[in-house]
Image (cartoon, rainbow, N blue to C red; front, side, top):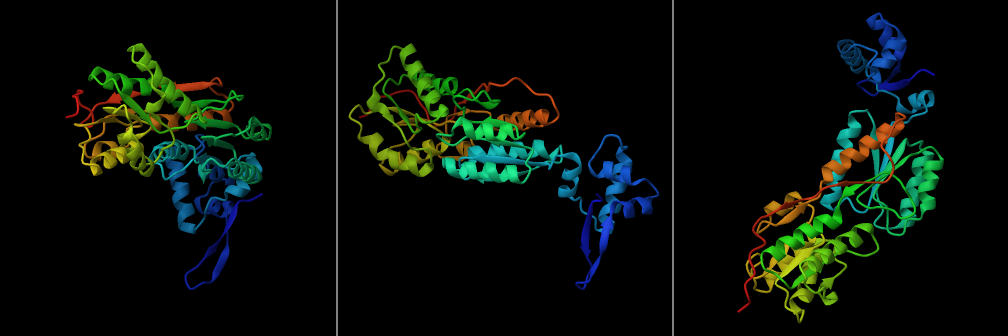
Length: 353
């Protein structure tokens, strides 16, 4: 099957379809060489590939991915599904995925599942219908193993990011959340804080369970009693953090510090604390998680934990491409080691006046 595309001339007249053979004839080379060059095959010298691509552009030729997929059994399309692209955490992961896929001339189709298993399942089914090569996903809460098995059984390998899935030993790339939150909690303990709240998250995700466990482990290691009343679950957005400030400030234990689920919650909490007439970083210490760009730009600059989002995206995309090439890293969880970023939103404990 020859790969072709219609070309529209100026004035609205439709020109004849441009064929690979047309490009080959103008350059005096074989159609096979043109085909290989347009797929960036290393079998064609770099300067020759560029010359062929320039001629293709001049003639108005666009690579027909669908026709190529019929010959190679590969569409060059990867599905990516996450909780919510509006969260900059996922934006940083997606940017790294896109950069890695670009190197192999793959493109991706993006979907937000908003923790809807049904919406996520529809996306996977649609991707299978389109002949997607693979899928990278941060699974929705409650995702059944059967949904992942559907993809794998149909030759569409799946790679997980940010969240793990019980019952599925798929390659999973994420930060070491338990260790990362323990870094933030230990930082506050080292500053003399003993009444430390944890704000945000849910036990319904591996991320939520691991982060809370890291908080608990750090308190216990310091021989500080774990008070369940100091946990305010739920918020994962800036608005959620802002609204949680009312609850936080009304706690009878009067916590002097807060470990937040992520940077968005922390920034929202600091805004709520400031609205109440207190000074974040001075009256109450606050830590975030993820080290988003917004963290260093907030007022005060947010003490947080770098969680390796870009590395997560890069490694996940690389793992999928390796699988498509016939080799891959072992299944299971691959953890990125978080690092502390100390800024102005935390300070030594001092009793409230």
